[in-house]
Length: 235
Image (cartoon, rainbow, N blue to C red; front, side, top):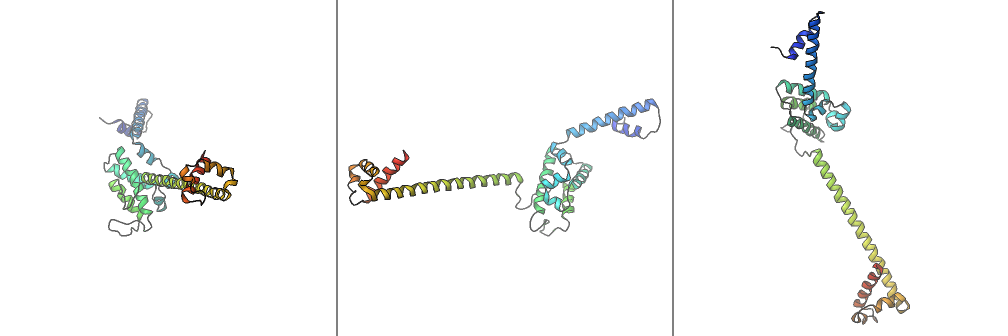
């Protein structure tokens, strides 16, 4: 018994006004459209996305391929070849095809241009990539390839490191400025001595041992005054 699609094809070729045949034709056509719609709905999302890409969208995702003349038409032709060979349009296949376009775009964008497996320059990169996809449904990642996802992750990590380094440098600059301010103020206090109320307040807060070096402003006395001044300004 013929399938609904074959029945539609057969009745579609008849040229008559028989009401029964006309109704049969419409029923077959309806079944054919439903089966086609069902097939499209079952198509992997990635593959459906690839099929409906516009030229502008393709160029946005794979500018290197677009530049050598490879685009939506080549993808459609490669898919037709693969389907004719019996390739199942599975989700894994579709994802592999999507990755293949990333691989190929990376390869043709290299400064030295596209090279074959022997390292020779490919004269017709668009045809070379098309044949690989139409034959195998896959284009292997070239040497040094970094996926867009990995590249984005690396860029994000580099950005975070750069931000952390900038923040650390800023904090260090603030600490250095604060230290410099303390040193300048301490120098002025030591110069003013007893005439400064703050000097007397800080000195009187020092332990007896530290205050013994006040007369000659020894290292111990100066260090103690510095610590007292920092505590005073911090509060």
